[in-house]
Image 1: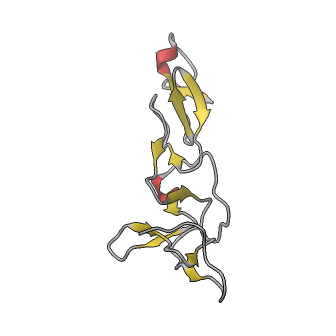
Image 2: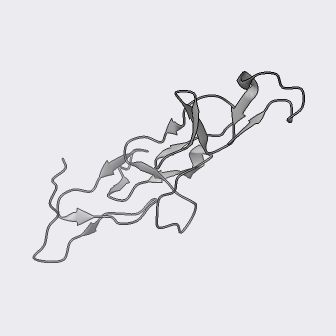
Length: 120
């Protein structure tokens, strides 16, 4: 999806076509932003990466990541991660998991179980 800077009239070149929010330019083609990426639109740039440990969400209470995010506000703490207490995020440590998007804590595995990955 794209639109022109002159509201559709008088445009003379593809250089005047800019992305809508949630879309980015990749090698001359327009694509919907993938998970953990967003674009505010109105440019010809690729989608921006939310950062390691973040994913894109449809908003409060969302349980699954979304594609086509149009704002950095859509970037939330990813499942398997938690806040580090210093404004960033860290992965859940061994013995813990987090299946939620957003600011939630890692939960200890039930007695007699552990996670398969160890993070420091």
